[in-house]
Length: 263
Ligand SMILES: NC(=O)c1ccc[n+]([C@@H]2O[C@H](COP(=O)([O-])OP(=O)(O)OC[C@H]3O[C@@H](n4cnc5c(N)ncnc54)[C@H](OP(=O)(O)O)[C@@H]3O)[C@@H](O)[C@H]2O)c1
Image 1 (cartoon, protein in one colour):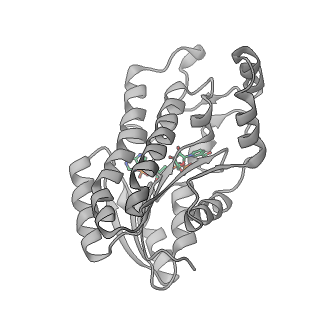
Image 2 (image 1 turned 120 degrees about the horizontal axis):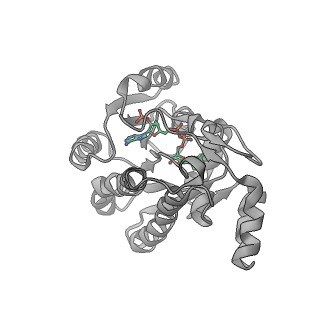
Image 3 (image 1 turned 30 degrees about the horizontal axis):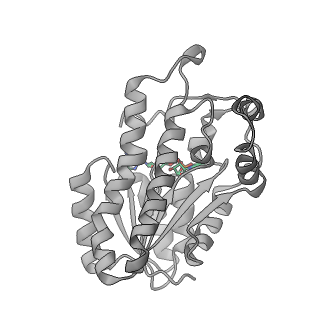
């Protein structure tokens, strides 16, 4: 059971998004599940309905601001949203021979991970402010707390989400709208399967969803996990850059190309 009644999840067909939908699904809960490919959301929707939730599906690219706004605002009119989870995200890393990322990849990450989150928030933030209720969850990453050497643009977009979330939190507090920034470490999912390197303290997407749900329900402004990595990253800030880089060397990775990047 959850105290939220109308929940939106972007990137709902992925590893973490689909487990979030399962975690929140229950009697009296309305879910809006969004990803580019609506067909991939169908089996999840049936599962959530069987758990007692009502489900709306939408095949929308979060880069399509007009399409996303039209859907979210129409949905909000019928089901005033009290939990907006901006979870859709993509990844890439260094190119062949550890060359730089292409400009196209860097732009794609900025468009989906950062601008997509802004489009998601901007669709409903004024409505939530007017109602003086609700919570916004932004899916960042430990890579946003300290840039991973193999993923410059991914790290940068996730750092942008931390700053964006902190700023939103300060702005919206007086309007009684809460903001939670989530920084997961390695979570088993199609995305992390493409990360070809060590994944210390990797946890299941179901476990991650429970941690995220709890953070939202408790009204936490920030939640980074697992604890050993989150703590290690915080402590590494006190080291000189060369020593901090040495700590990250064992996690060096190749990031395989996302087969869905051309959708
Ligand atoms: N897995 C990890 O270890 C980890 C760690 C830290 C943070 N995170 C973050 O957690 C979030 C979820 O990650 P995940 O591991 O669950 O990834 P995933 O399994 O690859 O799922 C990504 C989801 O985002 C959707 N998506 C991708 N591009 C989209 C777009 N342009 N518009 C709308 N939807 C889009 C995908 O569906 P379609 O392809 O159908 O659009 C899918 O539902 C991401 O923001 C990720 O950066 C993950």
